[in-house]
Length: 286
Image (cartoon, rainbow, N blue to C red; front, side):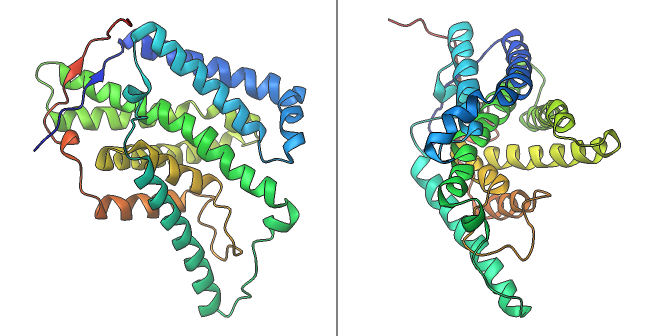
């Protein structure tokens, strides 16, 4: 039996203001908070377990989610953070991590390369290495997936579906392309601030656009944003037990492989079928 999943719609103006807010917050974090050392002062007592990345992205998520709650009545469930699916996503993310370790170990054995422990555990230390992953799965990956897939992609798809004459396939395609293009373009300030040459930006943006497409398709296919967050986090900070023989994280290899495999194996949930989701207007509290 097909269940009905209600998702509140935010007006286009609210979505536009969210992007403006994101840019402003990124500017504040990149050019003010990080250089000031304020976030490092929070991170240092935990020896990197609570990283600057984690603190900054949690703060930005709270601001953006709070804005959409106050302006449009959206709740966490409307942004993809629903009550169900977390356990499944955690289990699948763990299996992907195991598969990555097995792949690197097998490759080392087949090619007669030395099979050694990931040097990050010694150079950066256990707390900092784990902290890098926590900074992604509870910070950067969480915030970006909520914003670009849970909010922007899904809200655009629903808005296009609500318009007369827009088929489900066309709505999906438009939401995929636009949200992925915004995802890529909005990373330009971060890439420039991190020293990426202007001549290399087109290739960087093309890669980000492709990765955004894959992550949005994975969300559409599974209906589980937590799973997408897990894949994104592993791609940015795999924290493997064994040394990487094949670099799968620099150019998004983990995202590409994991997304394609999971989309092939996953059965799309009924609530994400070609028929439109039901819409619920924002309801006042109390």
